[in-house]
Image 1 (cartoon, rainbow, N blue to C red):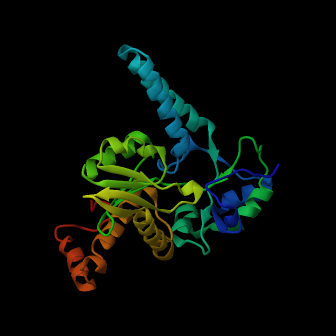
Image 2: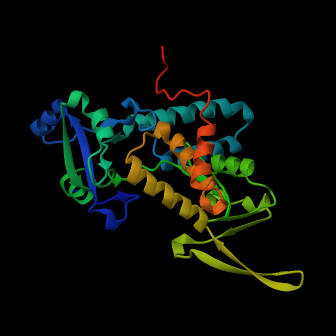
Image 3: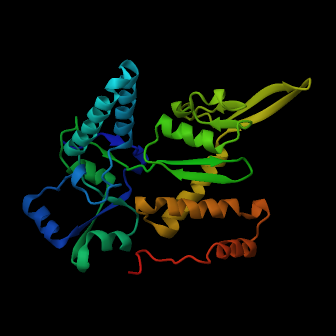
Length: 302
């Protein structure tokens, strides 16, 4: 049966172009067998690309922590070992086939997947894939790979971004507490990742994006006078919009192991923008100032 289950893909995106780059030998195999080859997660060379899906990983971690709370500390090591086996089993059972989403071909991906220029680029759409790849709909889906990024944006100020392995409560909670002043007012969406933030900061206000609430006016009294305050996450959304446009329009593709470097560049651009009184010449001088003593080499010289 055709695939009807979509993850992280809006119905309006089904017409988007996707590419599959293959060495010529695998293309011949595709024609011969009339089937795509799905790889097990645990055999992929790229350890980031082969990571367990974030949702599955988060669910395993949550169950793991629940077990530890219910058992004596002497049992914790055994529970840790059991969790490690579960992750290993998940990577053994899950199979994937990767397509690259872009309107035009990517030379970077071509070089990576089609070695020695002896390869084939297959162009399709998400909708066409869903209609012509026949799998069990109960266990198969087409989804976009999400790379968890957490950005802390000061309204009218600076940003600090983190590429995190898993968007779970423990990871997010530590970053938020380590990088935000306790006197701050924290504005987030309704995600449960920030559930107890009100206990650690001056205020924690949320907007409910799932109900199409993006800006909310808060009324309160201060020194006997009525006051209003806009509650929203538009500053963070604005930064992500700049980052996404830059990644799609300039770089087109980014390996996950280098994602933190791209984030650092866009943090620098945002933190040294004209709105903060830093013009182009001064921003360029600040960038060059950080260069002395550094060699821009991908691999060690020896």
